[in-house]
Image 1 (spheres, helix red, strand yellow):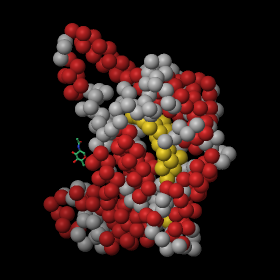
Image 2 (tube, helix red, strand yellow):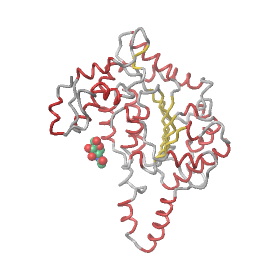
Image 3 (cartoon, protein in one colour):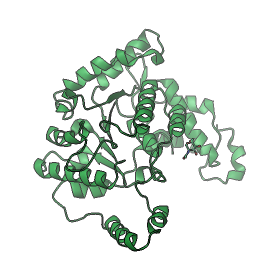
Image 4 (cartoon, protein in one colour):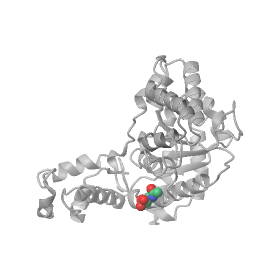
Length: 365
Ligand SMILES: *[C@@H]1O[C@H](CO)[C@@H](O)[C@H](O)[C@H]1NC(C)=O
């Protein structure tokens, strides 16, 4: 799957929406409860049942959940472009956290950047290198703040449901992951309600949250990230020279002082519950070309044309860039790359041609 189609696939969305907010509380995932009950019953009578079941159904066990450090490293190197800081922070924090048998608190990452910089994409890479089932895993919970927690719905009901959701998920599996997209649009009261789970508690009501992972995605702080990247760009310096220290202070300052942001006037920051702020930079022309080449390689592997740098350059040139005068950064990152590529190559490479004839399409124009 290419960069642009990497909006997280949200298997849980509907379910979470029903459960978490606007008052429709009847539907609790009947299948997994049934499976759970059957497992509990059979377990008592058939000693080997557990291992048979875990062969077919995802369980909270290392066969299903284990961190592939090499896999994540490879994916970050080959599939995420222009994000040296994010790659470094994510790899290091996950290595440390996942290899620690006794973490003092859950891992809390907060990813910041404009649309199209790869926040969803990099989250998906993390998920795929921990959960065998990827985003389909029932231990990965994706919330979209806008969708799931509309501002008009009664906040106290939402709070309780969100807390119950988290609690029951982690009771089922301590290696649960919770992803909150559009965190900047989330009600501050809701954010405060998840705070206890992020903190340094051995356990709460008999449940330990210390092995779970929380990932927040937001556009907050994008201005200071863009400014920093632009300063380097204007000075003719390579963005790889940007260090977290160039950014950390202005980033947390701009996040903390954003009046419109639900996230950041909350106590998450005051109490230092976020372990890492992860900045994602706007993409330069060269990164857009890399994204297009990556997508072309995926297509080539399916027998649809061959990667062609000239075409990639042509497509990338048609992207919109900002600021207007300097055209330093892509306005949409690598988003919508597939349709643009389709459009550009549509009368040159028929998609779905049989693989055998793929070489014929080497001349893309
Ligand atoms: C880890 O990732 C690497 C690289 O993607 C892959 O070759 C390997 O099979 C993976 N290991 C496991 C245990 O999934």
